[in-house]
Length: 403
Image (tube, rainbow, N blue to C red):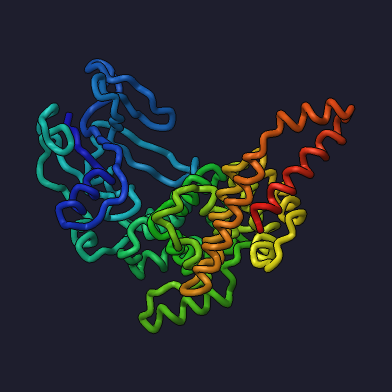
């Protein structure tokens, strides 16, 4: 039995050695060659895999998978036949992976040592030249079997968003276009699509996720109502042909303030994907996206008033349910800023507007309602009348703040 560290942990370790940035920690994945499920259990491993043999280490509880091969025998994510046996080689297991950067391995020499991976590892095994692609900062598919899993189109786009200095090989882009043309995207599982979409949005440069999908014709089938219009796509293509890698403002709105905005809901709302509920998008993301669609114009117009209308400001806070959900209103302001932030005076004006809205909400929330409830009871007010009294005082507090 031979054990190998594989995949992202090997890739990220090499990236660190090369001085390339690694944005996130990666779980360790292990592949076992020359073993059987019975032998793994006999050594204390716990079986957990449903679709193929995966086992938990008795001490570290990390996942160890038996080396396997895959063959496409149907449509969709489940349309594979999986073969495991002691005869499956490491190279055969690596050949089924998506990108050469993820098809490298290091043999486990001994466990428990105080090293980077908590183990002594051998030299990198690299049958598909992943180190050369890593050096050239290139995403390249391992074999033509890449086409068997359409989710890999989204995965490559997500890697491009995570590592924006890398490029996708022309041959890989061509293969992805062929997959889209063959309508492979129609067989994607919604949960898996959202998983890749959310990770792409939370990457360093979310706009790259959109750009790669657009480059292979996948954006419209996945997100038919996105604001990433054909005209903008043509502009990007023209800029790319001229060697200009600077994304235009319409796309950069996704990545502006990306180091500050770490909320998935905000990034999703700023992307303006339209009706993407088919991908099982979480309710919080959909709600914020609808709010920014409905109220972005009103936010800007009210904040620009020379003589603020406290009643109109209060009405917007109520429409946004800001008194009950102030954190969501804060995210609405962040999404609004992502969509409208520019340079110079425009940026300064937007910052001032954001501050006014935040102060307005604080003014309304800081009003003590208990004395007003007591006063209303003294006056014999009940139900809606009591609520109207409290609202009048909130509008008055808001008017004072706006002045």
